[in-house]
Length: 154
Image 1 (tube, rainbow, N blue to C red):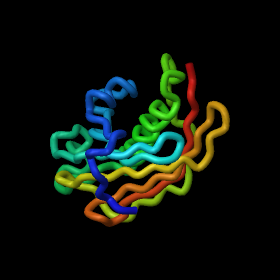
Image 2: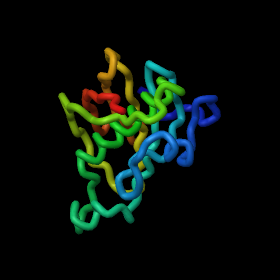
Image 3: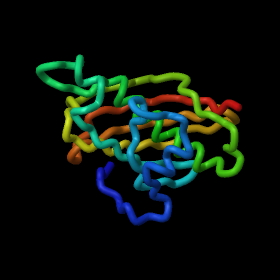
Image 4: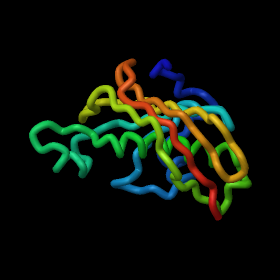
């Protein structure tokens, strides 16, 4: 997957739009911008990794590395925005809850100064359960991947 997409697409969303769509807030908000959304199919989000994020105080003090669980959470949040955008008005009053993670692989450390391009694809959508595959790219290289599922709840 390419890690560059046009931010001029009609489906690009800024941080204010994202805040309206998912309940996450600092320090757990892990998507800064959506640069591409194809409802019911795929999305690309951006997370700018900065040294002032609280997990870097202890992970690790002399070599800051973004925890893998936070990278997977950025995939889940990107998928959450995709689900809300896909459901449109039907999403009012609903939340997207993480259900499972499978086949997670971390290939290269993510460090402060990196820009993560978070690619998610819908693998299956059956009722309230959505299944996704995700990849995270930094400077054109895959740094992480996972399959995961989420459930839509009132």
